[in-house]
Amino acid sequence: MPPLYCAPRERGSGGEGCVLVLLGLSIACGKGATSASPAAARDAGASDALAVDGALEAEDPRAADLWTRAAEGEADDLARLAAYVGSDALALASPIPARRLTALRALAFSGDFTALPFLAKVATSGGDEDASAALDTVTALVAEPRRATDPEDAPEIHEGCALLLVLAVDPTRPAARRARAVSVLRMLASRGWVSLAEVPTDLDAR
Image (tube, rainbow, N blue to C red; front, side, top):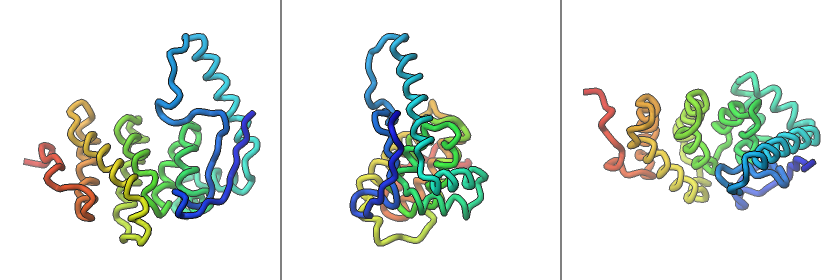
């Protein structure tokens, strides 16, 4: 079974703290997709589930304890988890159902915008609870004072803003979710990261 490996990373390498590596397990949305038969897909799903179980068994005990504490949703515990594992590990842990909401909430304390594209995708296509948590996290991140490290996250900021704009203008998405995206985009526009002229106004109160 593939191990879960937590290794230190420097800020300049694209993340902070630790990186969760699920070796042999494809967890990126759409990555590694094939036209396999339904039977093969079922077998792959069972294999992935076993891989996750094996990874969790091999997890750093300190990280496991922090995940357990943070599951209660207390801000201090979420912050400790984010500081210990880093934003990359939080995003990579999101496919684990028991950790998904915790990961989304803890990203609000990550101190960087590297997960903005991931959060924007969850806000667009996730369930209502996940989408709400993702938008709450983006709001919290943007509400923080500017950081000297923000320019390092420019590619992720650009991609995340573009995805949020797509959500905001998509009439097939729930109006309440689109309205939240509009609010976040206006906050991002105040930083000069989005053109305010691109932010839709059709959901504004008349």
